[in-house]
Image 1 (cartoon, chains in turn orange, red):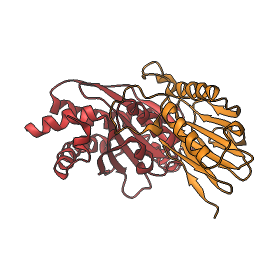
Image 2: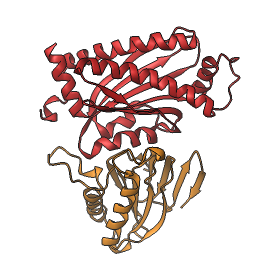
Image 3: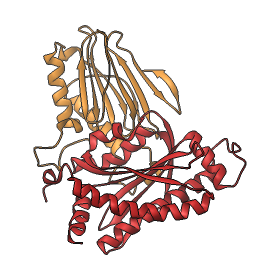
Image 4: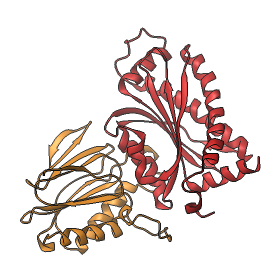
Length: 162
Length: 206
């Protein structure tokens, strides 16, 4: 049965043909979509931070971080039948809603998230088909495993297909 | 103190926190009702220590467009605050703040943003003063920053900073309403577990 699943902060979801994955109100986090167009299997990870280097405890959520989260999603998407060599990526988000505060905050987390996600994709040999990143605004995302289409919507820039 | 030990907060701890934030609300009530020349209603909706990932869903409709004022505070205790209003509420509140005819304000320009920032200052200063009194040391609020976008994205950007080092964040959610009008807003306060730990230690002594 066709399902629409919203992927929250620090989560990822992998689904087969006939489903839609969404992200509501994405800010500095990065949504990484991986898609096998032949097998029609797709995954979406809602990544909060680039890398895990302050956590020592077991209680941390590995899906928060690009390094540990993407590794887990890759494992899952292959386990569900996707061919790693066929995977394509879409990278969305990494905005900064408070650009004037950037010098005060620890870092421009959005920018660092984008950089880390791209670095990991290069390392895994996964090509980026399209991206919609940066800026100072929030985004809503819709990704269909049936069509492989990714739609991004924001208050500032309306709706567009990647 | 290992954060896993204080999660979730006990009823007694939540009650202690509610008491101090209620005191903060009383100061806000006095200042704001003078500003808008009306009775205002402040209700402490939530005081919770929760995993950061759960915050966006908990605060409400992520998609709605809000007019928000963001501040942070630093010192021995640190945290961030967001005062926000959906568009219609922000417009009507501006009418009241500027003593305009109701319905006269149709856009939030710089002038209206300044007034909303001032309301943000009032809330933040009141809450920070209470915290500073408890901890016995100065806490400095930042200047206010205006933001207009989807609620979920704004909250995400504020709390993700805490996610670098913490699983959990303290959320204090105050409902703000003007009875007899459609004006409805929220004042959210976020603090990392270290600040919560210090607060609880101090409160335990008193």
